[in-house]
Image (tube, rainbow, N blue to C red):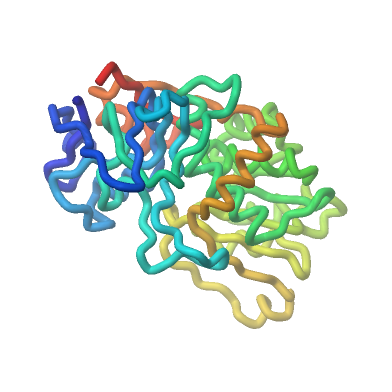
Length: 328
């Protein structure tokens, strides 16, 4: 089969299509012949060597295709070996494509608990784009933040995969989503997809501008920060509000004023990915018709994976970038 093989860590040019063996059968695992794989920022970090993946290596976390033993159309949950606790993953937890060969290939093998029927009426590109961003946003908003109907949410960074699906989940839950964005175009698109309003986060005082948009101007019940700007994001919360942090692609360190934080009665919640239970909760929202398919920014054939990574790193897209496969 064809797969994108990373021979050494580095820039996108290291992503080269090779002929490799089809994944071998193993007890408790299933093979999926992939039709599409969605890109995530996590894939960039794998390519750069942040996760110390074994080389040569096939990256990729998200995928959708046909389960070979049943012929079902399925989506893949890239959260492997979560464990028995709902509170946090086990020490064995990893994301598909970290150390186990991933979805930048025509076929992939995963534990049986990590596949589920593809959403009815969605195409393979849309299905492939759901899981990593979707289950991460679901866990952040539902499991961790406990977002309730009628509450307000600010999503930092309109246009990314997690930010986009977070707006959809918030709307499905009956909450009121707002966004920040790096351009007016991204904010306008987010509003067309369900956000109530937005503001640019290019100004130094963007958190104050965002707070002014909140109901009553008192701040948001929940702020979802997938980029690492905690010190500014906390400024958009109402007293007693919850800040959920789940990414660091803009900043890996944040300096916060401790005194104003505890006087504000804020909660800081860390999260990452999600469990099989979170996956089932997300799919329940989908099956109930409360979530529309993810926005697809652009699709590239497998052999153009390097170009797809360059587009992802440029950050000018809105929605998910995907790879499409030929036959095995």
